[in-house]
Amino acid sequence: MSRSFPELAFTPLVKQQQELHNSRRQYARMEQALQTSTNALGPNEQGFIRLRDSFYMASVSETGWPYIQHRGGPAGFVHVIDPTLIGFADLRGNKQYISLGNLQHDARVALFFMDYPNQTRLKILGRVEIHENDAQAPALFESLRPADPSAVPLKDIERAMLIHVEAFDWNCPQHITPRYTIEELKPSLAPLRERLATLEAENAKLRAKLNP
Image (cartoon, rainbow, N blue to C red; front, side, top):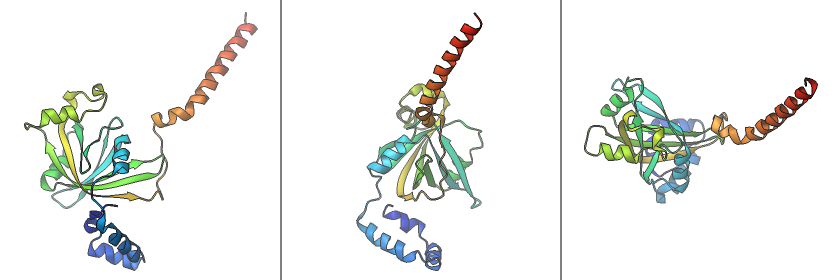
């Protein structure tokens, strides 16, 4: 947890609920301990973000309703530019532009980065800076593409999203259901596939002997 997280998230009503449910003392001690900490992303946070292939972003509309959007891409598509700034290339979607409109109203966002296999999540609070049709956009589009540029063609990028980090917090693993992508399952499935290939080859030889 960064120093600013409780300042931004623990409002009077939140503290009231912490008192009611007997957790306020624990968090008050934590707040005291954080007084000398930094709000910058450390090596653990930076490394965690660089390994993610998706995240969730919440914004607030002009009507006051929250809106959550999923963003995904190759692992590392979110770039850590410096300890207080992250960014990604925003691609064409269904053209509703709800998040984009919300951010014109209020630049604040809440991000959830999930690691389902290891039941870990990182929360980030920040403010978004958008570059679309300005002088900085072309260079940002290039710099925010993944390591394999072919994975994200330039023609698919609509804008660059830079997020100035104001606070972050790690969540406990409780109640996170482990889930795995195909890429994450490949190492575990490799021995089974090799065994299956061997059995299929043996079966083919046996069928050839039985049906000369």
